Image 1: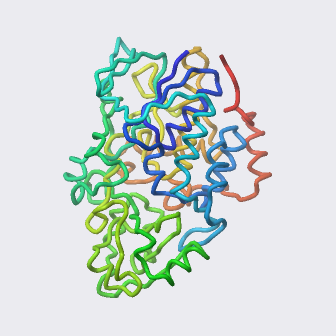
Image 2: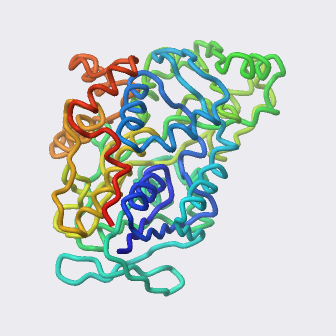
Image 3: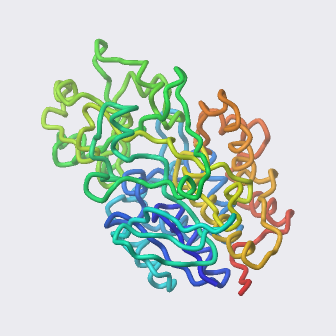
Length: 425
C-alpha cells in the first residue's frame, strides 16, 4: 500500500517514519527546499512536561527524532524563566540529520513539491495534484501542512508578511488539503476574538551581538537582559502563540537562548529599540527578516478530527501537527505525526484505529485539545506539554514526571510498549 504525506515538518517526518515501519510505501511532499519547517527555528526540547512526553514517545517506539535531537543538542538540562531541564538542539545541524535519516529509512522525499489540490471520490481522496500539474495517487493520505500562511493571512491578521521560515513568497503559500477535500477548517482565536496568533520568537545573528553575550550563550545556553522600563510591553504577551512563554519575565527582560543562532523569546522587537540596549547595538534579525515588526501568524487552518488523527468525513485522510489542533512544539508534532502514520496503515487494513489512552500525557493532550477546540473559548487555548494551561493539567493529573522507569511502566501497563514499531504489511 502507498501513503502520501503532505508537509515535511516534524509531524510529517514522524508520520512518514511510523507509516514506513508499519510496512507501507511512503512518499513525502514538501513545498520548500528544507524539511522541518518551524523546527528550523525552534530548538527547545524536554522542557517541563515535554520530558515526560519525549520518554513516552520513546517507550511507544517512536523515539527516533527524540534521539536525533538529543544527539544534536548544544545545551542539556538548562533552566530559564518558567522552564526546567530544557535541551536545546542546534537548528543549523538538525535538518540535514533528519533528511539523512529519512533517506536511510527508504522514504521517498520530494522537495520543492507543492500540493495544491486533491481528486476525491465519495468520502475518499484518490490522488493529489502538484503545482506543476502532476497527479499522483495513493491509498492513504496524511496532511501536515501546518496552520501558518499564506502571506495574505499574515497581512490580514498580523503586521504584514515577515518573510519567516515558511517563505511563502519564494515557494508558494500553504494549501489546506482538508479544505480542498470539502471539509471546513477551524481557526484559533486570541483573547480579543481576533483569529490566529503570532509565533513566539525571532532569531538574531550571533555575530551581530556583543562578544560577552555570545560567550555567555555558548557557555550557559541562556542570557537574560533587562528591558528598559519605558519599553516594557505586557500586552505583547497576549499575542504569543507560545503561551508557555507568556510570563511577566518575558516582557520585562530580553531572554536569549542558544540554538545555534540566537533565539529571541518575543513575537517581535522593534530593531531601533533593540539596538539601544547595551550589547545589541549591531543586532540583526536572521528570521523572520521583519522580526522588528511582526512574525508568522498561525492557527488559521485546523482540520476537525478524531482522536485517532483521522479527519472527520474523509475515510482515508489523517492529520498531524498544528493541522490537527492548537498544539505548540516539536514533541507535540512528533506524537501526533507518529499516531497519524500508524493509523493510516490500520485504516487501509480496516483494523481498529489506535487511540492513545489518557493515562499517558501524549494521549491526554490529543483528547483534551480535541474537546476544547469545539467551543469558542476553547479555541483561545494553546496546548503544549511545556507550560500554560496544559502543563498545569499534567501536574494536577499526576502525569508529569522525570522518572523514566515510571514512564516506561505506564506505557507497559496499557500494553503499548513499542507499538509504533509494529509491522502490519
